[in-house]
Image 1: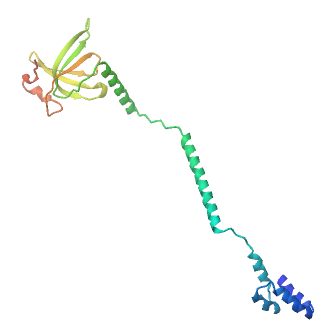
Image 2 (image 1 turned 30 degrees about the horizontal axis):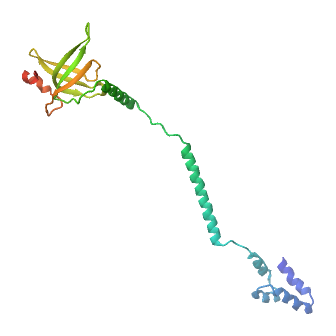
Image 3 (image 1 turned 135 degrees about the horizontal axis):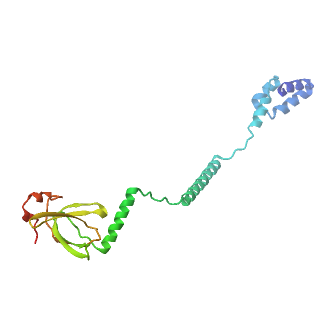
Length: 212
């Protein structure tokens, strides 16, 4: 609307003042608008464009440094928060299963038995001598001697099977090695065998199961 009103106003001004008015107006307009002003075209767009470019912007380097500093500060705060969260969490307790509990109890019982009576390393083929406390009217020690023909590992319930010949008859006895009634287990001799169970001695001659 202003662009239409200005040429009309210039047209209303007397001719002797019109040239001076055009010179004053064209002094602050771009050169390519001077001709358009004399011809009555719209020349106010140059003024608008001139005012629209009056903007003050920060340098790119300063803006980048400010953004980098803000990012570093945010990262530091995030790291501090994570450290605080990690420190506040209590340590997790290990989950103990039923099988683990039985293993722990077996281990504790074996350690308690070893402190009172140490058990030697027993293997199949060993000739052992066992002193067993027999509960009768009065407790007495009975000695059993024989060859270990098998061993059953079961923690605190580990057993060994001993075989020997008594009065021409083969006798086999199973002993729990951690029993409190056993006072002593002694390995008399070690024999090298190639089997885990010497059940074949039942079909062999009695002299193979006789020990003096």
